[in-house]
Length: 283
Image (cartoon, rainbow, N blue to C red):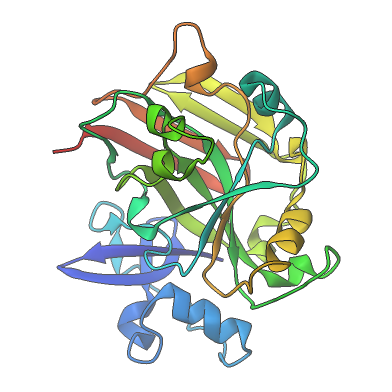
């Protein structure tokens, strides 16, 4: 099953993606579960009866606007330098533990909606990543238990403002400009996605292939990342983990290849979907 969050007719809702649009769950159960995060929480606690079968398309494609899968995550974790090619191209040393930084919720934007180039930088870089959405709470979980916490998968473009990122050795400023990270289009449940392994992950900028790898190229696996994060914080339904980007990012190229207003960046992960965002100048 695949879930989206969207806006239509002046209201925000969420639902089950259909080939031609969306089945609106918010219209049917929104009085008790107002958003996708609350749905994940209810599922994680075992409080939810089977969902209504998606028998109709309430809004056809083109009649709604995609929003970030989870507009209100309580925590967004990002893993840096998690593909060997990317670690090597940045010149960073081999690490014993995952490099973790955080994003704010207002940095997210939905599928096919603009990622904003800030007015005080031109160094806007793309980073295609698999996103893991937590569906069940856990603290101090082992790698063997980690899969039980996964509520679904999606795609995140960890748009990076490189000059601000390099002001110090901390990543936070360059990762938290408003509407700089595309997130979507859908949450794909683990049952729908199947086991993850050699699926491809690719990024295109204006149709040019700029990143290409496979999910099993990650240095730190998804179970390892979840176990590590749960060692210092309690993971909750609706938390988001961006698992790192492959090599080929713009700032390592000669000359650097940054995203400009009018560009379009598209990320495809086999079995998960395609996230596409135009680049627009921020006001």
